[in-house]
Amino acid sequence: MSRRAELTNGLEDSDEPIYPTHRCFDDIVDFFRDLAEKGTPAAVLNRFTVVHGILLSPEGEPYAHGWVERDDGLVIQTGIYRGERILFALEREEFLVSHMVWDETRYTLREVLRNDRTLGYPPWIPEYRDLCSSEKRAWHARSWKP
Image 1 (cartoon, rainbow, N blue to C red):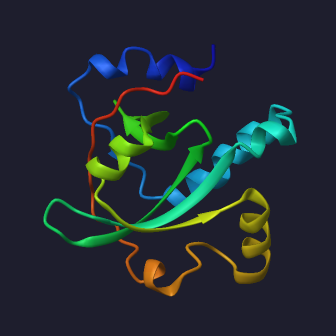
Image 2: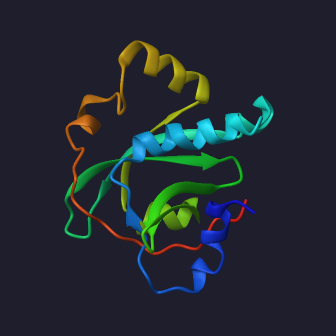
């Protein structure tokens, strides 16, 4: 079992927060790089959609965020839990409500690769880019067990 998988065990029973990495767009690249290094077939990679969005803080302030969605409705993110980077997931509907998703743009992996090559570092929509922030946010989630 990988270190990342070990860290997610029992997470749903914890009251400790999962902190953001403040590098969600890099986390998406790392997620796909890890899958590619493991030899994940293209058919599996194509089950994922990259999403960039505008979310609202509890105070109603907008901020940009990036995440990955699997075709079975799981939102997969990276966070900091007990000082370690972990992967975790929420059901899409739970994520939309708990993170107050206000706007989103969805990309296939092919579109991500093209945009990265032609537009540079994400997010690619100027309104999203303008909202990138270093403000710390925490959330609770059930773990993702691959």
